[in-house]
Every structure is written in C-alpha cells, then in structure tokens.
Length: 182
Image (cartoon, rainbow, N blue to C red; front, side):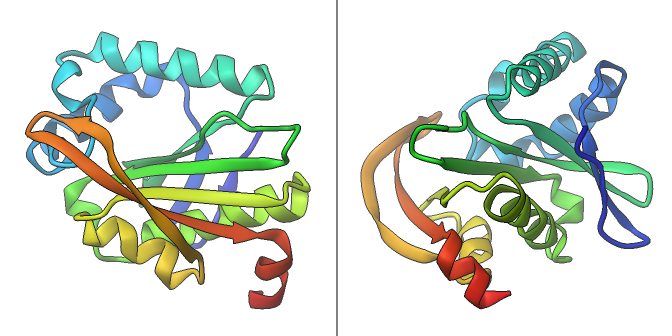
C-alpha cells in the first residue's frame, strides 16, 4: 500500500474509513474556498458522504484503477491527492488534488504531486501524467507550472460548478520529459 514520508512534517498515506470525520471537518472548514473550484462540495453535508468517498477510493485502488492518498501535515489531515482512473492501455493517468484552506501556500501539494508523478512515471512505468485545472484557479495552475508541465491547451466549459461553467487548462508531462527534469 502506498505510504510516503516526504519530510518531518508531510506524509502521504492511503485513505481509511476511520479518517472520514477528519476529512469531512477539513471540507467543512474550507467549504467556501473549495466550492469555488470543486463541483462536489455542496453535496458533502455529513460524515457519511466522506465515508462513501473513502470506500470508493479504496475499491478503486484494490481494482488497480488508481489510488487516493490523504496529505497529513504534522498529524492533521490537510488535503487529498489521487490518480484518476488509470488508462493502462495508453499508460496514462490524471492527477487530482485539493488542499484545506489553512494549509495553502506552503508547497505541500507541489511536494505531494512530485511524489505521485515519480510513482506514476518511474515506478508504475506509465508514459503520461495529466493535470487539469480551472483556468481561473491560479493556485492550482501554479503546481503543474512549477513542476515543468507543458500547457497543452484549454478545454472550453469543461466543468459545471455552482456558479456556471469553467474552462480547464490541460497540462501534460511525459516520462521522457520528467526524467530530464529530475
């Protein structure tokens, strides 16, 4: 099972059902900020929704379709990072992530993404990693830029959020490029 200690402060570990309350509390504390960019936030109204999410993530991991990890900062749940469904035929995967508002701006998600990219391209032998972000989400877009991803294009009205549709910037990284950047 994926478990990675990044430093004395930051740890990535698989989700477990007993973490549902901590995850719900984090969403609830960051609800206004997260709602701006994530379509599922308003539907998370109690701990049972996070329990269901965690069970789905565990099942996806056991089916070898991807996995999701919690980011823990000094023992506190700080956010989520995960592989979307792995395309084994084309050897590619997308990474999704979000961070609680009080944990933003410290480089935690960039560090977590670096670990996930290493894992995908060097350990799982995938060829491509993709990150999609709403074009207006400067914080989220800064991560693939910082990591050397290529902006491959913009998908218009790619996602419906509570206030309307947003465009997605699509960033890509190939294994050959990542090896040169390391």
